[in-house]
Amino acid sequence: MRSRSGDNLRDPNQLDRLIREITVDAYGDDEKLWAFRQALEDELTVPCDGYVIGEPVCIPAFHYSAEDAIRHYQVGVDIGELSLPAGFDGLLLWGHVNNRPFLRFLIQEVRAERAWTA
Image (tube, rainbow, N blue to C red; front, side, top):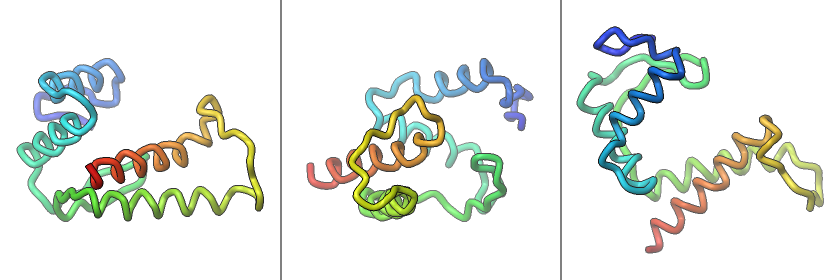
């Protein structure tokens, strides 16, 4: 994957540089999200093809609302909960890489709900 300037975005250092460039004036997660949305809207013509976690996707448009986010995060949480045994009351440690997708959905769902009710 290459940016318009030809940078190799598979190189973690180049990707970190691009992320810093996009979020340089953003304070907090919400402003970072909007900075990414703006950068994507400015640089991409939709619909376009892309990859998410190595899987091909088609991006038809960019749209964000807290209500939509909550619904999508809830689906991720519901799917993650299906993999837990009945009555689970243990810990899901961040250090276990396989726990991270579920924990990310859970964290983002809470953040979106707080933003929606604020």
